[in-house]
Length: 258
Image (cartoon, rainbow, N blue to C red; front, side):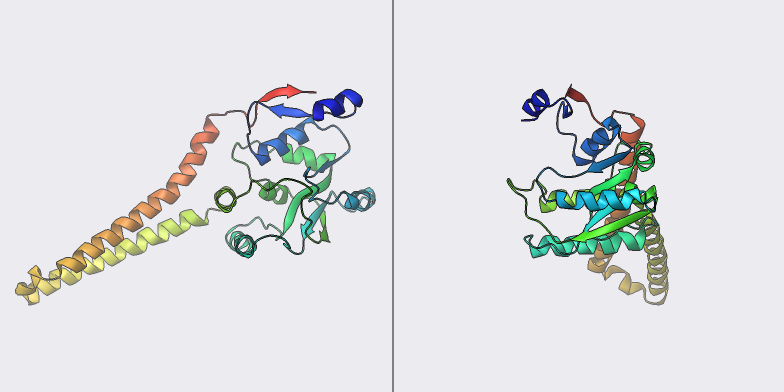
């Protein structure tokens, strides 16, 4: 369909990847290929209402703003579980991150060239676009609208994919999990020392009691071991991001471009 549109109208262009590199890579590629003074990012399934474009353009032309974004004020048509998890994510990430992300905000926005260039200057491989848009700053105004059902097809964003995307956002824009790991490790170490002292004192006062309590000892070992694995896992997430970034792989690979 895109090839046909390009053939009929040379003002229509498209980029096709060698494989699916994800939504954020596609967004980056589109903005990188753009050349206008004002750039719009929007979904093709019409969940981003095109009727807002004239208002967005009029507001941007006033010079008061660098970006006109959009925000859904409801999630009508979506499952209650997804809505609950989405609201929980926004509350959680805004508590632990210095970069504030507006709840319900969409990638659908109109930006000045200056803001687009600022976004493109962020070249990290593991991308969380909502966070990057907030991090670069600039004067942004949000337009509210009610949720719109897609015209055709079904969303590929399962609950599991959304969870992994949310986890990427938390890791990319907050060091709170690392701090939590440090506190968990410190508390576990202190509790282990206290427990060791208690065992020594009990052995001195009542030596016969030393053979008792094996079940509680096993539970303590499992508890401390579990906490250690938890902390190592959290740190591993950050180390993994570093590992991928230092490889310096391209964010996307183009197979066809017109």
